[in-house]
Amino acid sequence: MTTKSLAPAPLRRIPFCRVSCDGNELAYVKDVLESGWLTTASRAHDFERHFAEAVGARFACAVNSCTSALHLALEALDVKPGDEVIVPTMTFTATAEVVRYLGADPVLVDVEYGTGLITPEILLDAVEHHPRAKALMVVHYAGQPALMLGGNGRAGILDICRRSGLRVVEDAAHAFPTRCESLMIGGIGDATCFSFYANKTITTGEGGMLTTNNPAIDARVRVMRLHGIDRDIWSRFTEATPSWEYDVVAPGFKYNMPDINAAIGLAQLERAALMRDRRQRLATHYFERLAGLEDIDLPIVRVPFEDHAWHLFVLVVRPTAKLCRNRLIEILTERGIGTSVPYKPLHRLSYYRDHYPLSPADFPEAERIWSGCLALPLYPSLTEEDQDYLCDILIELLG
Ligand SMILES: *Cc1c(COP(=O)(O)O)cnc(C)c1O
Image (cartoon, rainbow, N blue to C red):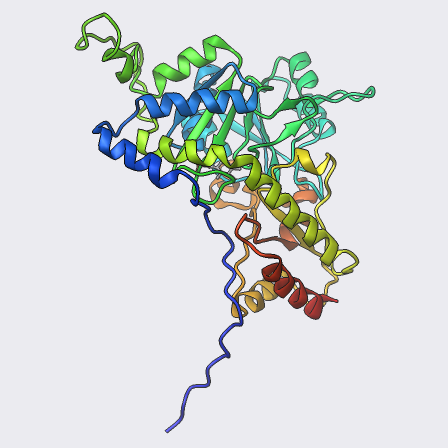
């Protein structure tokens, strides 16, 4: 009889992601359950108010996902079939799929190596080749802001868009809280979309927020997030006109955020700055421990560390490394460490490849990132001991 040899159990288990719900989440959810009103009402309104304040936006509209927010943003900007929308290739499919929801076409562009961000130079090139483009999606990759505002004689992304007649939607799924010079991400572009998916910097389980300073965009988004009804359920039950009376002005969507989720969001918001500080400390520790490892490129940070949301810590394993990225992931998994690969660029996914004339050669920097990128665990409950265990393994394997 043979016995199957078992791999030794890992010393530690370090998941890629772990939510922190150790504040008022439970108490606030309990209040909602006891109130008897579970769907969108006062908690969602409170969450919108506090969130708008946190990012310095005039309006915030709570929805059930960032994907919904991105869809509503483009709809409010009147993106139509045949329109072109510029989208960086290094992102999650949601950023581009919403363009297709409206029958418009994503124009994929490369990103900068080291930051994963679209730059003013990349945008200028895209505008030159696609003068008809209607809008730009900016992804603040990993939580670092793209160069929206420019300065020192260098045009920022916002200037270029204004000059070229491009509307700006920011996919800020990674970018709360993120500062861009004197402003917070959320108060800059035409519309900014945040995600509160479970693995994001703050969570509501599932959820999203659209912020804007433009009253017309806000008004359209509010109507379209709830069936195209001209007033939301809450105001129907609180204002003077009869509660049964409403009008439908468009075939809208069902994208509202329930109060149960908003209650979690309110508790998360209270700790958002603390949790960001903690992630920054952990990121700093990664930089200290991994500096000088020749087989990897650490992320390039072009802003003060305090301005970065530190959602992801993405390094790139160089092509000349002793181990390739895929093998490294296998070994880390065996040793109990979760990692992630953000992202396989959109131009490599079969839907986009089959529908558009895309060639990897047109995205050299995204290709360099994709071939070696690896995100390490980065969340408030991660300990320095966890990080040291992980970094020791990386140094042993790649040093
Ligand atoms: C998570 C994510 C989304 C989608 O967020 P949901 O809230 O799950 O819809 C969109 N874009 C990026 C860059 C993301 O990371």
